[in-house]
Image 1 (cartoon, rainbow, N blue to C red):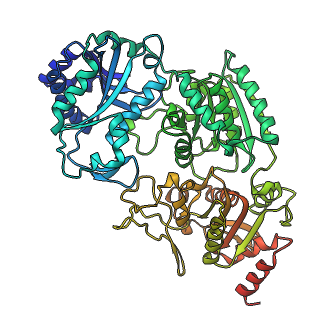
Image 2: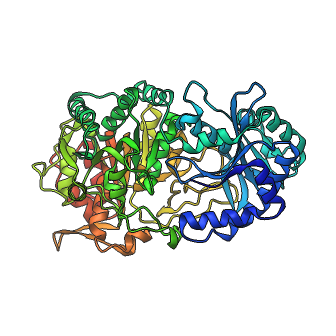
Image 3: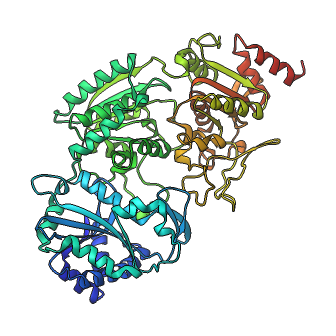
Length: 638
């Protein structure tokens, strides 16, 4: 999709006559069926007038111009693409990212700057990084730019037509040297430099033919991209399959290969609890399918999990890792195999409360996923739903797949690869929280998994830090029982939102946090970067991850009441406004603590704020270590 395509001569005329924004408005309404936002119209009026002058001054009068071109399989639109031939007569194109900024400031992130946007200061990608990522995306997924024998060479730059360069301008900071080389930034002071850049790459003109190739070509990842992503995953020792994981993987891979050739969509449903290896199987499937030449994509509903995977895979391969809401308007069967991890996080539909009313549809998210691919593999844990609106149970997925006439195949994972391989521990947690009846009523502590109860949050934190000091991965988590501050302090540190007596610690930073002090990761990298050890994570940042040792502050939002012999949820103790409104509040909080308590590979350490809840857990422990007994006696004065 694009909002404008035509010759550079026509583009120049449309900008000179102040008609370009009107044409884009008309095309926008025709495509989206609602008016373009006023802020976007103003951006077109200002930036495209400047771009028109640049194209005219550069003598690019026999070229093709695309405006607001939607990157395949995404909701992102690049601002401008100019196509033609280079001096040697080879097809070429240049992406131009247009910005109205008149200034920016440095940010902590390696790829970000801070600028005024949408009525507030926001941390955004440096224009060079953004433009080069667009270039990389098209070069890897758009056949016109990689298909032999005559691929279109692609360059990128950014044009900040209102920005005047200052001394020690953060836009040209040393950390952006690589990005600036790949996709240079031109400001109002670099008009002639940009003109030379464009002419040097598009000197040959005759661009309408190239424009046609770009518009007619369909999304298909290049073999080089698929080999790259598959190779990175296969080279990561964290993603190695063993035992039952390999058995299920082989079954699923065989069915995926066969289902790819079926006339109807094939659905593979893999169920398993925490630590049964769902994500490891999913990633290995992703790798091997890509290496075999299938267009496989990996989707989740978790920002933290998806962004961490993108960080591990790298910026080039990260484009194959998407979200469940990425498939709105996707072409039917555009993907060969869609791997949906953490499928319990599938929502009713793909829009959010921030989605304009005119953009919302009644199409269920599950239908978008099922129609986007020839084979869809769902990995699901029915007891990991922790927010209202998450409806991706195995029963729901099966029901919707049957409505669409899909072939459905099911597998179940039972063997435990987390919690030191202790299936009994996970079953005990499920039983103790009243989620499932299992044979593990008592925790005997004999399977090599280190479960401990601590008398206060200070000793709990000390134990987690000690584990980290020994070289283990370790994180401290908590139930969402405290409000989460929206902004960092003036010095970039985080507010100590989690307060228990004299114990005061911050939640992990928000996804959109700006001006963070050095070493503080944003929410989506809290589980992966070393600085995460200094903050407390909630279920939304911990779900999907595993650590050698996990610490859990069990708050007062869920308590066991001996008189009533049942678990009771307390909305007044919750700091999560969305979950507080849920009718099934207690069930969601039970699932939350199940997720937190099952993150550990070698050990789980817990502090209970409510004494009766702790007593209930202890009553279901057959053997306590000497340290536990000592802690219990000290706390209760025995």
